[in-house]
Image (tube, rainbow, N blue to C red; front, side, top):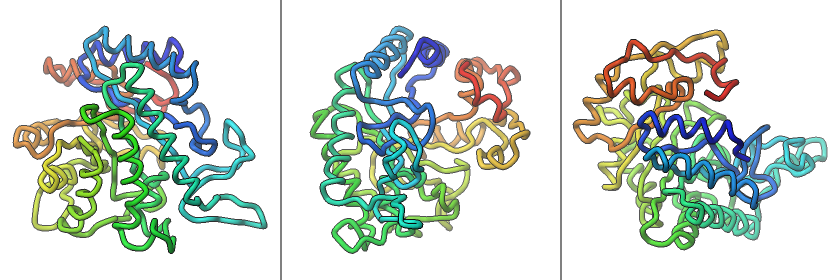
Length: 333
């Protein structure tokens, strides 16, 4: 649960001019939602009380904050907290040497996870969060249903991309019902997966529109379009990135992300732990923002290492921005 260090971590960024903070991934109330050590919960009296203190601290500095609601799905490993005996849950069963590593989700399982997301969203609203983000990207549970590489179901949740989107649509509708018509819902999605960085859900703008429109209709207000490098065009024949195309096709506000403010993308730092990313020019980003290609910019690693990143950029003090190294992830600053 959030302790005093976590509260101060978020407060500092709000105080330094970050307009909207989207938290780290927080797990919903399902026994297999977590896949990693030391991941915060977004359920239970004590964790929610801790998050309420975070909300109050951010609001006191004039900031806004939304939790990222998360279920890791099939990437969970046996032995993972809080109960290591529980296998992963995902679209497809996986058994090795007679042991169930991934429990293939039944309709009841799907309904229970949908309800857990809806309850987490309702709790977020109740403690004063300014919106919620549903994590539907990067090869975690929602994305595992989207991706044909991890979903070969033969029921209504498998087959076409429209069917593979059914789980997400039901989840978004349940969250919308839980929070009401005017509460912001952000949906994060990606083409790439941690299981396959070259994966693509769709190959054309037309297919992207067909994929996104049902999610938009289900209740998404803002699409958080995750890419590894924000400046890369999503499709041939246009300079628009994924956020740009999403905005054009849905008419909804979008968030762009991907190596903002740094000269190296994150995968390099997973491979080479000694590599350091230096601050990079924001000229291209600001030009595209000014041209209304997207509406918001998400800053990841640059803001993790330097809580004053936003105010330094605003004041033209780029020379004072701190470089990023993987070591920076080991402490809260």
